[in-house]
Length: 428
Ligand SMILES: Cc1ncc(COP(=O)(O)O)c(C=O)c1O
Image 1 (spheres, helix red, strand yellow):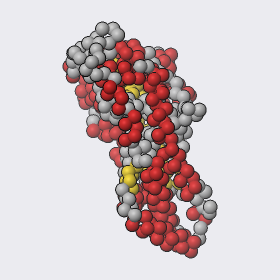
Image 2 (cartoon, helix red, strand yellow; image 1 turned 60 degrees about the vertical axis):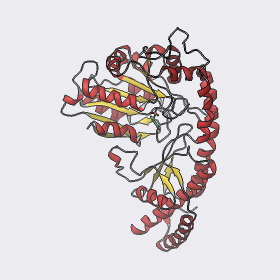
Image 3 (spheres, protein in one colour; image 1 turned 180 degrees about the horizontal axis):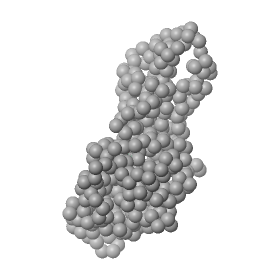
Image 4 (cartoon, protein in one colour; image 1 turned 45 degrees about the vertical axis):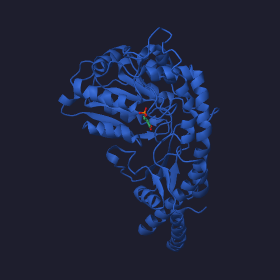
């Protein structure tokens, strides 16, 4: 295929007319497809329905250690659930607090707690003149929304194929005491799908922050979300690496079963040092008498242990893989060699990150919308929704069927070509 950039004005104009016709045809099909949010599909959710039978009215609700899950108490969760979530994160159950239905509220509360009450006795962030945060980009819009809501100034850090640019992270964290945190999705990152390399994790663990209340928000949302049995990414355990460096208090790790059991109706956990846990618990105990232990018990009765959970994850992978592959195949066959875009090829998680030619992303998303294909808003993967290059688009292949995904991808690549040619013509 000929690179668009090497085409003459005449060639581009002719191509533009062709693409415009194709686009009018596509619009005429009256499609209504959505590749915007990383939701599990109906088939994935159906597969988890047996969880609801794992704890019936005929079963006892007593845990192995004798806790009556129907009653108040046991603020930090039942031991079996701590074990399961610890195994998901690859840490020790003693580091874990099990919370409620999802992990985002834990992250929100962790920021809110620090803002109102400080971190392990430090000055509450609300009393500081300036609080800043590092945001590897492209990243997860809902992370950025939390820090934005608390008026925290967000600084972007470029992501490369091994994780965030650690030289830059180190410089900011070690030289500026107003930097209080960093968002990380270390495995099958949202949206790039990359996994942080061992050296990146070790560089995080070895940081010497200027601020004593600096914390790494390690959102391990896709810890067990491999697409391929034989090509799994491995992430080393940040908690033990931090401990090796005498930095045990520097990290909060989060995870949930939102994309294991039910989205927003699973169980979620945090793993962190003893000192941090005590601080968190001092607020939790005012917030609640205890989270939903029945749901915790239901989950452990169903999965039994990490091996049971991994068997379940293979079934998710079988449903997700064809969708990722349909998208990637379409990108490769339609855009490969045109020199107008790049994209990631994740081995797990829920997203593909697509970079169009600079200045084209917003228009591509708008054109797709007009043709009945909804995408995540351009810019959403950047703090304040501002992608300085207007080039990144997050593709979420999980929700539509593979057939719908193929159709949606075809419309998407058509819009990419159309908008890029238009852009090249304008800039010739
Ligand atoms: C990186 C990341 N963290 C957290 C979440 C939300 O998780 P939960 O449902 O546990 O709040 C998502 C959902 O897309 C995500 O991509």
